[in-house]
Image (cartoon, rainbow, N blue to C red; front, side, top):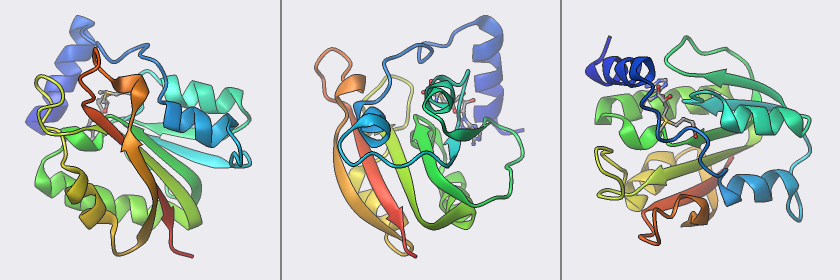
Length: 168
Ligand SMILES: C[S@@+](CC[C@H](N)C(=O)[O-])C[C@H]1O[C@@H](n2cnc3c(N)ncnc32)[C@H](O)[C@@H]1O
């Protein structure tokens, strides 16, 4: 078990889960309910925690698989969401993450990431926007990326969303 996994287990055991119940990312709502919303299909919620995004997606007709430090399901997902997981990983875990996410994405799938930038939140390593773009450049096309208003931490603007499409 990695030290980060142990840390999250301790957090959950202590009930220290400051991310729980946070507002859903506007970028996710736009994708599900906005103009040109995706038709419901299969979705994978990475680092789902207690499942805020999974529950929201299921309520909107998506067939959702949530994973959180458990073995991944092998399938072709049309939508993969990650609200605050990639930004906490080591470089090595990020390498594996991109490989595995790419492997379970259906052709044309959408990948929505909402992540803190470096220094964006106390105790979270964060991830530089250029690193996100570089890591997904081979197999994914970046459709849009902007600061994520629902994670604005008192106006400090510390988080971005990234919407990618998997090459068909
Ligand atoms: C900041 S919380 C966000 C939870 C949820 N996505 C939300 O928006 O409420 C990050 C979650 O990712 C999980 N996590 C972090 N690294 C992970 C990994 N390598 N594999 C699986 N889950 C991971 C943690 O256990 C935690 O539940």
